[in-house]
Length: 403
Image (cartoon, rainbow, N blue to C red; front, side):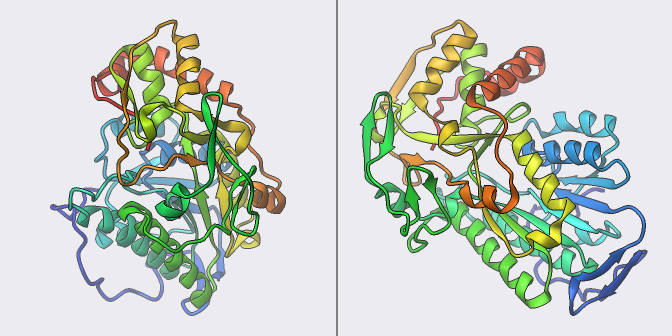
């Protein structure tokens, strides 16, 4: 399907929406939402952003885990590299629809939907600082609003992938940190305040600014919670940290681990940006397959997770600094590229974030399976195998560092 929003903008007010979708196999009550929806036969599962790194990974996992169901991946293919997912999706029997979450008509024309996994987003925390926030808001907030409304109409459950960048920048910058070896570590603990040696939890204070990207995702979380309460819909929010792995098209502010690995393998410049330019800033990383484990589990028992908000990431055991990442990449690539230094921090930069995953583990039993070494081994193997396709995308001279 070709998107009908030629400018990429939303269409404004939605047209009058049906109380029951056409060609539906659902017993549906509009007031009560999906808890009254009974699917007859196989499910039809929509993944928005389905040709992106996370969306395509989830689509392929669900194709494997749920062979009886129909998996639909919708994407506008705006991000460079997303087109590489199309043969993989096709080869595994995933239906691809060229469409845009900003355009209600693209969603309305999909037919029956039983479950939605909303992976569509502009994931750049730096987006909007040049004053161009309109497209970001339309994709990240209006797009999610469209997905929620689609779920309500079809009586469908929804899994929403949010971000750790919903936490306010001043609060994260205000964490007490000290340098230990080649990384920053938390100096102390405040469990009631939402931070400890286990990382940052959902109890962290939410007052303060968080970037346009962060506020669109936080607003989407709040909207999802309202739909859960108002329409009794089974909706789950996964507040994700850094997700990485093969087929991620790494950039400066999204996918730093892949970018770092690719530059060591293909060549190109890198720099330690911000906070003195020493590369001590820390993130935890989660293999995309571990996220797929969780989403597949949630999908299998969505009612049990309805209304839940989980902090999802690699946790302290899968955290590393940029300087530590450099050592890993040099060891695997056998090359040492020059790493520049830029001490100036960008407005959205934060020095430290590690996910406290104790709650999601306690409530679901889920925990990551892949170590940092596993992640890097998989990324380097993928880069080496597909370097003809990937070198033009990931081997440029852009300077990069995680934010």
